Length: 69
Image (cartoon, rainbow, N blue to C red; front, top):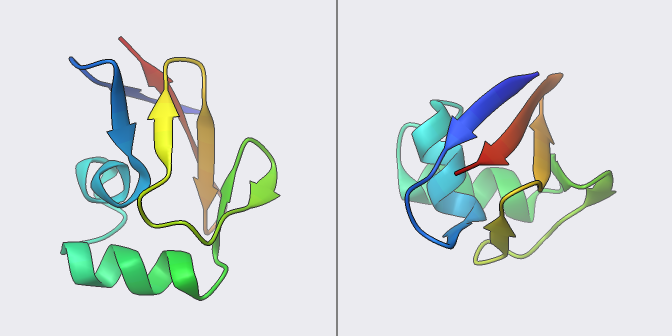
């Protein structure tokens, strides 16, 4: 599992996808999310603006990321 360090209270899922390097652009991240390829805390998430807080996890293509502050 990879840790994704944030400085704010939360990060939006599409921004977390970019920060992790899984998506090169925001548009690419949105397409990946809306196609049902991303799970948040074990459930498929279709909300590109979903807020992730410390302790939340998201997965894409077999890689898992934990949000930490």
